[in-house]
Length: 484
Image (cartoon, rainbow, N blue to C red; front, side):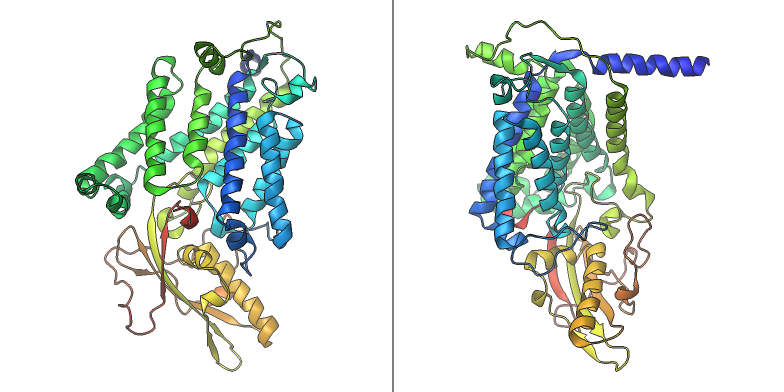
């Protein structure tokens, strides 16, 4: 009885805290920035013709397990999907028909994301999570056309859970981005040193030589870990958050300068602003003497705690905090075998080069059919697939289906000559060349035991031109080739 009473008391206090009124200005400012960033991103996809190259030209898409039913709508359909995303983002920005717009952003962006694993980027996953948090939050309570038109009550405050959930989402991402870097390669400056050397040519000689220094790479690697593991918690402390924000903003600007990693720096800077006081936009507006951004003077509302909302917030935050543990439930190095790598904030952790060649065999006749990847995949798809075992397996299943349908082979076998180099190591064999990949099931939770382990000191791939050497592909973790 006493234990139940304690739990009930804790839940009551938590609910009271989550439903305390806070200024809605901070969440409204984030809503506006979020919508603006997405509008710019849609414009970039149109301007760079990425809609065509990523979602119209490919003849095959690497679907997520369980989402094979998500298909592209064709040329005109895909352009309309992006138009709708831009419209929904604009409506979010101005706060008009906000609930419809926010869910519209979540659904359309999720649809685009689910079309092809070859396009996976951590910042796209991050955007989906933030879109969901905004969709369930009253982020249109302040500075919105919905308020101006009387579609929502004219009040300046929202229940605290909306702001706290967004902050928690940011904090979880930042801390995990530091935790995953506590590994031998990263702390030794790998692959960061190689990437810094790769961009050194863009800078004057003195800076270029500095970027090529191994000591700089190691110092920067440790600095990034400290920024996330120490800086992220300090964002919760009023006295330190301004200084930490300045460091984070500088860090993300440098990321953009060095590697052009799309919307992630801007989205993260916008999200980091959530850690300031809930009324920080009003304070800024007051200092700039901008009219129309102050409070209306309405009474502070009292929000009735709701158990289902409290339960939802607890479930969401705990699940988001625990999901990145998944890579550590599999044997081996996740940077090598990719088990659980996605959705775990394992950003910029590995640099992999892959060489792969597929062969289809008819077991009835023994006839072998060498596969030219460009006949089936775009270059980006081939590059990504060459170091992603789940995509190798899915492509093998696709080849088997094609050869059954196109060549009438009853039980086609698919073999892969695959070598991968991780963070500058020698090439190592990735898949047993005698293994029929078409016979291996696609799984989600169980480990893919057909992936060969990373042996230290084992022989790498044959030299180029020696024997049956697969084509070479290069993958830089987290960077969008088209954005680079």
